Amino acid sequence: MKTLTLAIAATALSATAALASGDIASVDRNGDRFASFAELTSTYPGLTASDFRTIDANKDRRVSAVELQAPEAQSIVNRHKVGANGLLDVAAVDTNGDNFVSFFELAGAYPGLSATDWNEIDGSEDGRLNASELYAGETQVILDRRVADRTFVALNAVDTDGSNFASLVELQSAYPGLSSLDFDEIDTNNDNRVSFDELYDIDSRTILGRSVN
Image 1: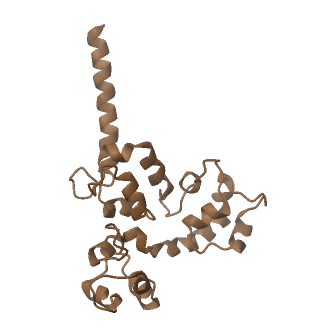
Image 2 (image 1 turned 90 degrees about the vertical axis):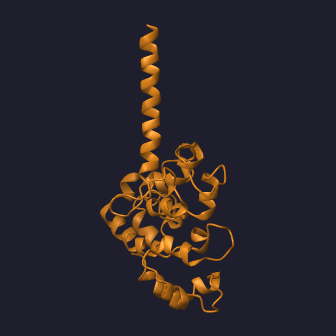
Image 3 (image 1 turned 60 degrees about the vertical axis):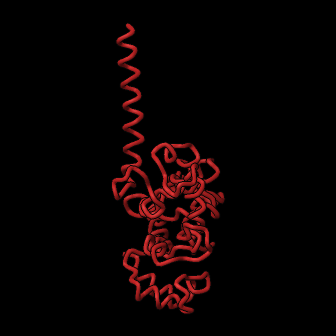
C-alpha cells in the first residue's frame, strides 16, 4: 500500500510538473525555460509592461513556470488570450467574472469599438453580451474589423524597463519587421529612444503598421 501511495504521489507530481513545463514551453521561444516580455506578448497580444511586472513576482525580468502558473498570472494572461481566428473569447474579456461582456470590457479588448457597433452586437438590448451574441456571425464581422486596431501597441505595452520611453529592442518585440532605419524615422529628436508623442505621431503609426510582421 505504501508503495502504491508513493507511486500515485510521484505520478501526480510528474503530471503537475508536465503541466507547468508545457505552459511555459508554449511561450518560451528560445528554450531557456523562462518567458520574457517579448515572448509573452507574442502569445498574449495586449499584455502590458505593468501586467508583466505583476506576473514577474521575483522581479528578475523573466517569468518562470511557477510564476506563470500563479492564479493572478493566469487571470492576467487569460484576459489576453486570442482564438485561432484572432478574436477573443468571453473569458478573455470578462474582467469581472459575471460570464457576460459589457461595452467597456469589449472596448478594452477592441479599441475603436463604437456605441453603434455595440448596438448592432447586443441583440437582446440588455446592455451585456452572452456567448451566443459574442459568437454570432455579425458580431464576429464587426470585431474582425477591430482586430486591426489592436496592431498598434501602446507605449506602456512595450516599455519593459519603466523608463516611459521605447527603445529599438522594445519596439521590435512588438513590431518584428521594424528596422533601425525605421526607428530613426520615428525617433525625430535623435535621442535613441521614442517618446509618447513620437510613438503616436501619424507617420510613426504608418511605419509601425507595416512593421507588424
